[in-house]
Structures are given as structure tokens and as C-alpha cells.
Image (cartoon, rainbow, N blue to C red; front, side):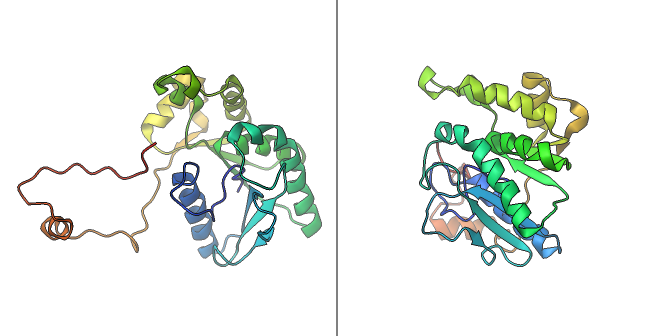
Length: 228
């Protein structure tokens, strides 16, 4: 797994620590439960954090913090120039441990670029999930300051051409990949994110309403997610 710009172990709730962190963490953990060895590579953001954590995500799963640029939190555009160094350090880590991976799964466009760099040497099947798309963000951006840089759009286009498979979270995202980027529909697989049913379960509506003080007769709109 490549999750360059954000760590699956990061504290949730920040601007850059939300859905993707949970997705990578839970997917990696579940694969580990099924006996599949998973290494999650992320950019090191704190020199005091050990570079290898083989405990937090359970058996068979490690998080490897890769030095690439300053070991501190930086903005996404500032990470882009360090992608080649990140990819080289991933390769060096694999060489040092004598590892040969079977599949490369990258998340977000920065990780997709790292996957292209790494796979120039590994030549293994690659799976890409974007989580958000630059074209879509630009279509709803309220002003020019919120627009994504052109390098992101062209990078996403290149990643779609290079990857063996593209994961879309919804049928709508599948359409966006084809409509906005001309992605090959034969590469796309729609895999909806799952739900941890040990954490989330259904209860009778009247009990839930009573617990939060909403009268049964009132209308209630539920939004789940951070407001950004």
C-alpha cells in the first residue's frame, strides 16, 4: 500500500485526516486478518516516530514511515517534488529486507505517481484509488484559490493510463473517471467502501431519537462526514 501524503495511524478529524486514512487502515487491517502480508508506506512526518510500526494494525500488517523531504507536516503541493525520493526509499527498504511484493495498491494521486516510479523496477500489477479527483474539485471550487493545480490533473491522467486497475467507490465516480479523464472502462472496478458492523449497528429509531433529544414528530437530516 502507498499512502504518501497521509498516515493511516494519524489522529482523525483534521483537514487531511479523514476518510482515506480510515479506508487504508481498515483495508490493510482486514487483509492482514485474512493472512495477507501488507506493508503500508507513508511519508515520515515526525523524526521522533519509529520508521517501522508492526503493531498498530495487527498481525501481518506494518506501517513504514519513509523519509522524503522534511520530516514534518507540509502541504500537498510541497510533497510533490519529493515523490522520486519517496519511491527510491521504498525500493531501498524492500531491497534491504529481501522483499518482493505481489501487488502495489496506491491511494490518491501523489501515491499513484510514486507507484509509477516504483514499478519501473518492480513490474507488478498496480491498483489505484484516487479518493478525490482534481477535475471534480475544480468543478465545484468557489474561486480560483481553491482550484487544483494543473500538475494534479495531468498526473491523474497519466496514472489512469499506467495503472492496471482503477477502484471507484461509487458508480458515479466510475462515470467521472471515464467522462472527465477518458479512463479505460475495462480497468475500472466499483468497490463500495464497507462498514465495520462491530462498531456500527442499527437500533430502533425512536430509541435513537430519544437518546439525542429529537421528538419523534420532527424531521431529521443526517450528514456523516467532516464539513470542509
